[in-house]
Amino acid sequence: MVRRLRVIGQPEPEPHCVTSIVALDITDASHGNAMGIGTADFTTTRLLAKVDFEALYTNALTAGVIGIQRMAIPCVMPTDLAAVCAAIASRGRETPLRLAWIADTLHTERIGVSPALLDEARGRDDLDVERQPAPMPFDAEGRLRPFGTGS
Image 1: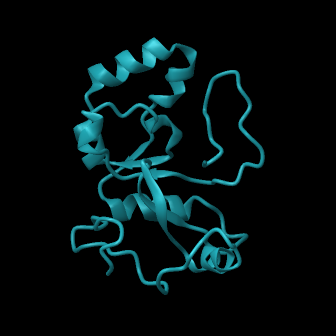
Image 2: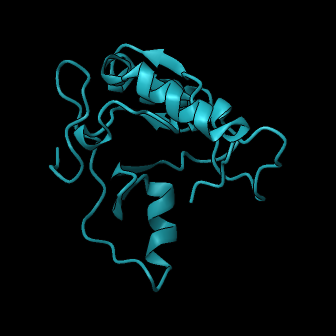
Image 3: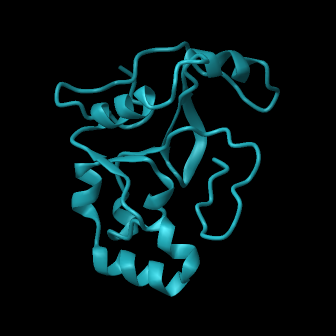
């Protein structure tokens, strides 16, 4: 849970531990319904091109006040690399970079983390560290390769 609801009239859960969320793509199973995109701060032109706005708006309006903020389009960046860099740049510099990377919201059993979170993961009994840190695998066009494919 990222502890971000963005529901009009409802307070956000405490503590507020997420500074920025980047949504890079939507799965084919979503059929273009990007409901929830409003919980992100940054997205990509690739994701935006896949949005079925009729489905998104119908879903959001049916949800009423809960759906309004959750359908809002975040800052759109041209590539995955640009979106991730924008999120990193907007976070402030007071603490080490704590970055987590998931394949998609239905598959969160494996995550990639930055070195600052890796130390924390090693100290938890409910997590197993599978491999050592490596750079996020962006290709020459700035697209992040699918999670778990390595560098």
